Length: 322
Image 1: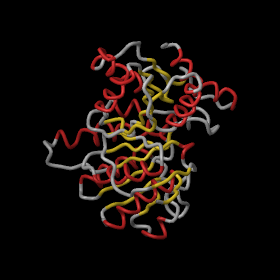
Image 2: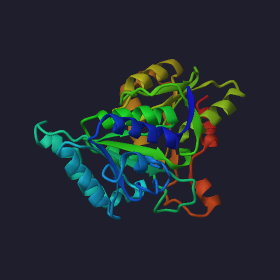
Image 3: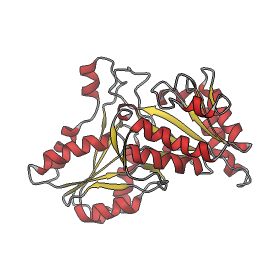
Image 4: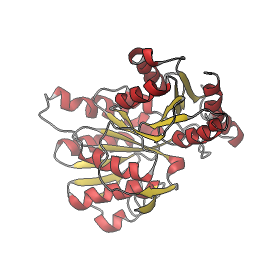
């Protein structure tokens, strides 16, 4: 067992596969000698060289388009966008090419590409560098989407993402990069498998990414009032581990869905609808959905914190169910 930061877990996952397979390449803005905007690829340029760790022009359309072409012709590219907000510039290549090509060619072509995207608010980066856009990606058939919360999960999910023959969107919580946690395994974690990070019998908190830690704080506060919360870390947004959600709600009969994204039109709504449609008979209360406020992310720290959901929102939602 070792201790790694979240960023180190991502880097280790990429490096393992690059050592094993010369067809795995990494490219993006400043991922080379600079080591990436957040330092995730630090040292990889020295180990793998400029042919396999390549800096690109400032053009997200070109970055994703290059990944599509590379994947179609036999490589396994990892493309980094500096912020997930910049996906807007590369959306055509992702939605109309990467997501559809394998289907439209009748499975005669593979599309093994990973798109890494830092996401989330809380760093004072303002409205154009702080969004959570996972709902956009989960909406598109042909894309797989993951969002790890720990170093071990980041490492294991990266291995599986690189191995997959479909495009995988790999969201990374910016505030998690420096967070340290234990890594007991360097084995792949299957896409579509969540995990229970805290057992409880009174209410299920279903979440992912940085909000797993907000959920843990809320669970500690609720426990003081005799409410035992169970926390599910989805890890994979699509495929979604419905079986794990069903198992938890069958035990607790109450569900809170917690995400950092803007609540309106968010992926939290899809999870909530799935619970209401498929597991309704297990519920003793309406599903509570918690997300960010319906506004661009503010720059001022006090407003940014007000905009973001936190553990007290979870506590209030849970107590309202009893």
